Length: 67
Image (cartoon, rainbow, N blue to C red; front, side, top):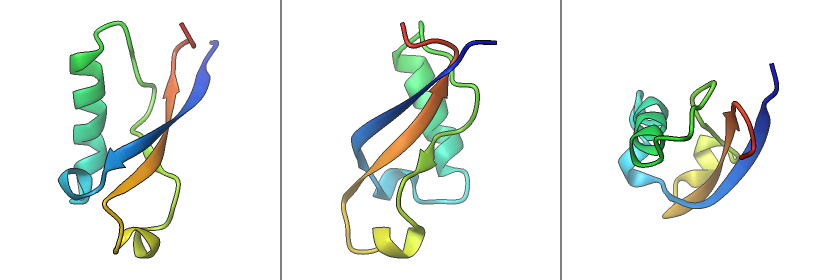
């Protein structure tokens, strides 16, 4: 299977900081971008303790293809 890893910057932290937040973010990405299928939940690129005083952070996603 061919896949691509993409980095998305400027994701608001607060709405996705709960336990299932990254699952909800995956659902939101797929809902508003029907052509995109994520193979896994997104992952924050910085540790939780480093996100404490920030409003936005970057995530990595894995998609079926880069198109």
